[in-house]
Length: 447
Image (cartoon, rainbow, N blue to C red; front, side):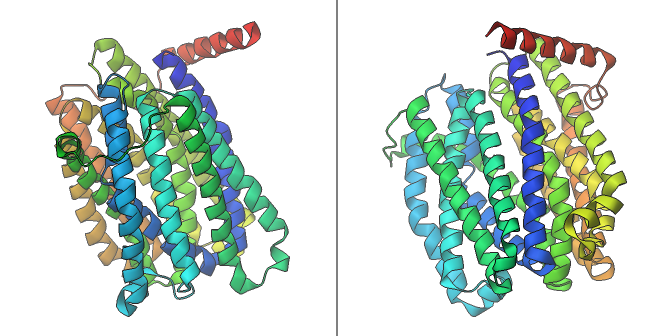
């Protein structure tokens, strides 16, 4: 399948995916309320942190080396299997340490989530998430976009249906049982998705996941991914540090309000992320003027779409937020307004960073992430005590802008690639989109 068709199908997939995840997020917030949403955010923070730390950047490495090895993922499959075995010991041990140490538990775990069942939720969610990440990354390296897009919609649909059912029966659930029900449903969905990914892996890849401890195979992979791993680790600080600061300075209820603003903004990540997946394996080959032109088209399509939708959300927020989540979440609106520019910056940097990697300048992604982390940490401690969740939103947007500026400087000055034609759709792009849509309709009618 060609790059332009992969791009079109992926773009069309995002509309139902975005709507379904929006429905699921809205229903979950209505079910949990502000306090419950804050506690949920703290738990999910631990999941994101552990998935990243214990993944060692192997998701990115799986795609890169599968594409580089001419579609043979044998080496990566064996390395991923080894890491999963190690993490089946390390992940439970780490969470046992956190739950067993009073000071660590008070810092990282909500007061209402100290039961052993929450420990089981965290351990199982991290392991299953890593499993699905490794499989999807390998399929991405193999350019199996149809399976990736289908699973994207399937995951969103499962979330929407499950939380619709829970919303309808919420009146029969005791308030103290609401958070466990939400987490139980999410764990069930994660398990179903993992089983589906395993079935797809068996059918499309079929390589036995035999672990390897051969350092001649492992060392080159981890040497390459370490810079990306460190960059992603610092990005996690940019994305999640504000959650810890808001929770510490403003309390769980304010964190729940802030999480709603963040969740609404981060829904737009479903637009650039699939585009990044489509272009990524192509960029890991040789760059050509034709490929650069296609990359710029994808970049313009993603950035323009995100900017328009973000503007619409900002205008509708005074009516949309209280209408969907309840009047208690009205204070989320100002945080959302200040966060939306940063969301646009992030969506642009998700694609621009791939161009930096293709130009063998991956270290500058690390520098940009580090500069953004300094801005995040400094401004969070300065602004959150004064302005609350609005201060956290301002700090995040400025940090995201910092990272984008560093990437843009590298692309323009080091790679000698112009930036002026990367962000806004041209009139000719609409003709290209129309042509792609017509080709798709012709294929559909032919079938």
